Amino acid sequence: MSELLRALAVLSEPPSRQAARVADVLGLGRAPSRVEWTELFQLELPPYASIYLGGEGWIGGEARDRVAGFWRALGLVPPAEPDHLAALLGLYAEAQEAGAPESVLRALLWEHLLSWLPVYLAKTGELAPDPYRRWAELIEETLLVEAARLPSERLVPLHLRETGTVLDPREAGAEAFLETLLAPARSGVLLTRADVRNAARDLHLGLRVGERSFALRALLAQDAEATLRWLAAEAEQWAERHRRHGGALAPVDELWAQRAERTAALLEELAQTIGKEVSRV
Image (cartoon, rainbow, N blue to C red; front, top):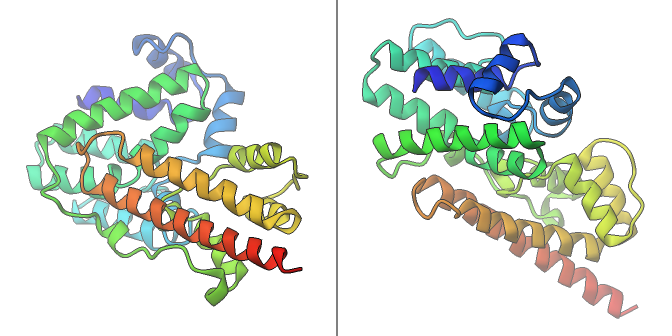
């Protein structure tokens, strides 16, 4: 198991001869190209836990500090990027090989891996080319085996317990609304650049090139009601995705699903409010 985790970790790092050998051993069909790695890991889905677990939705912050604290609790010096997927998979493999107590492995598994990776891997499966799609499947299969061996004991990860939900723009303002909508742990929704492009295409709206918040703001300015309804439908789909394991990753999956449902309800309510206002004009 530890050797498999180390091999999978290698593939989240820039392509190399070692990565090509690993891809061959794992039966990925072919080694991913540098362009594919850049598109997936730098532009669409950076593999840092803090992005998906932090209330801000970006690299760093309290979520990264919490991950670094776990390294220190094990008596290790955290690397420069303690929440990078390769670092976390390597840490789990190292803990296994060192014969760490099950309590340590369970905490690492549920607090710092299963708290975000099922969400991340689901999106990877949608966006990634074949080698990375199979890579994502292998990671999920491996972690599901570990989840069955080390059940969560119904504890919700601290990362998720301390993260709020999407803020209502009628109370907090549009900027805070968009920031929290784009923070996966708050919204239960992982919106990538590709998703924003799809929204513009589906709604026949002009796409402004830039960060997701900038592009979303432009879509809302063109047709707020349609954009909000598109986002609500996306949130509803995420609620279904979160429950795809059928309880194998409870209660983590359920918490993610509930947040996605709450987000969908808020977005639909906002769309209805705007629709009523327009109808009065």
